[in-house]
Amino acid sequence: MWICSTLIAGTLSAAVGLPAGSAYAAAPAKTEAKNVVSHVYAERKSMFEQVGTLTSIPWTVLAAIDQYERTIQLTKKRKTSDPNRLIAIDFSEGDWAGKLNPDQADTNRTSIAFFGGLGQDGDGDGQASRSSDLDRLYAMAALLLKRGSAEEDLRTGLWEHYRSSRSVERISQFARMYQTFDTLELHEHRFVMPLGADYSYRSTWGASRGWGGARIHEGTDIFARHGVPVRSATYGIVEVMGWNMYGGWRIGIRDLNNVYHYYAHLSGFNKKDVQQGSIVTPGQVVGWVGSSGYGKPGTSGKFPPHLHYGMYRDNGSMDWSFDPYPHLRKWEREERLRRQKK
Image (tube, rainbow, N blue to C red; front, side, top):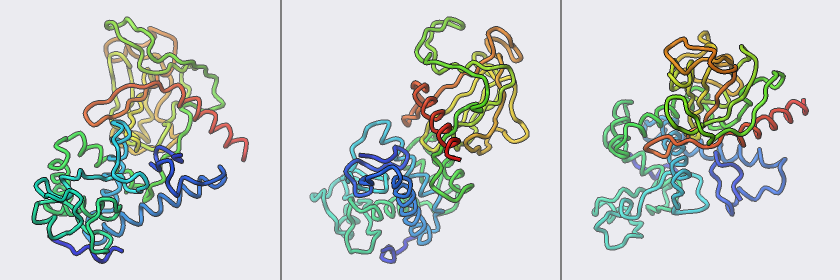
């Protein structure tokens, strides 16, 4: 299938992906920041919808690819071709112009095609420019369309591009979330317990652990009474739910920043509203504080009731742990401020 593209005419937030120095990053006051971020999301969504309309690829899939690229670039600290761009999807010079193309900065669609390059003219200006957000976005769509626009065809096209079933799964998860809420603005957070609960915590990430072999503590322990509700910190999809020898009854939630949120030692799950594959929202109860773990299924009481909360970032090949304590403090503070303003 070949579709004509000529019909398409200091960082505010890591999730939004605005680089410092961009025109959008110049909001002079906090009161304006939210409106600026919303405008960026709206402009991105408009691009996804335009290309989606032309190609029959759901805008949610294009948005998911773009967000996945944004998270991987952040993790691997990749440099981008344009520091002011809104779309994170990128191609190397060789892939864009064609590896044998003597002009690696070529923007002529005819010569790019002759050398097998992926460059496309998505904004209708007659140039296949790697610095154009719409050109790069349309180039990704055209690449996928070589296999077709049906769901399985798109998954095949994604696998052929990334050569990773992990990448395909992440993009599919992100697309489901965008489809569920029909918006890109899904980066709010809540504290993992009700603020009115009696709880306490401090930074415990990296401390040594002995049960089950020498290892480090990959999270923050939040001590609370047995049965205190445990809440999702974010919009996300339930990736794992069940028993783990170390974590007991645990649940794992993947968010749109490609961060895996790990909740362990629960006394039980909110099975009425949450199952594996469920999409959850910030503040939604997913389970309750307990003391399960360190043994076979059902083992409990080997330590005081608490929630073990961990955060892991996907770098494209594996999840690696980082300290959740600063994030917990930030979300707790932000939620308290929101309550005070009501």
